[in-house]
Length: 133
Image (tube, rainbow, N blue to C red; front, side, top):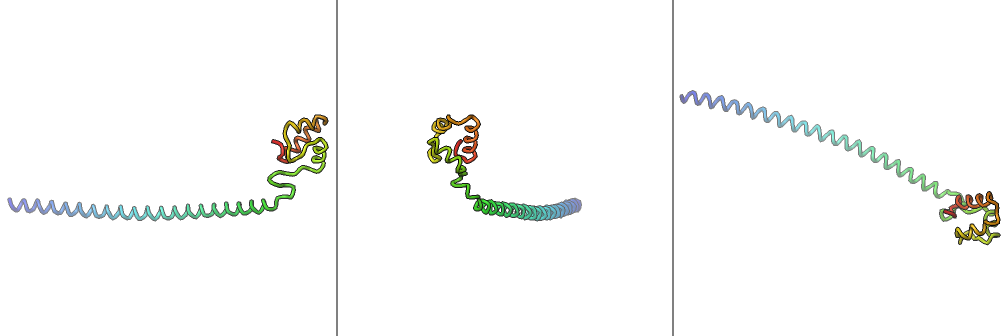
């Protein structure tokens, strides 16, 4: 009986050792997968970082081009508004309207003596110049 218990105990210890070995192998495989996953994440992160850096560089280049273009705006643009042609300014001055202090009511009153087409032309020019909303 004692011999049978020793045999059973020996078999049990062998099964435990085999199970422990399998667990160690499983742990090693999991660790390897984790290392692979971390390496993949690192590669993906590097790719995303490179893509973002490219986009940032492109955006900075575009901003620099736009700033350069903004400095070469024609002289006809001042304070964000286009200036009126001399003839239009003269026409408005003859009607008693100054460009600096233009009000809708004063403009309409000044343009009464003009034909409908001329009024449309004046208002269209003022809108293009940004002086009339």
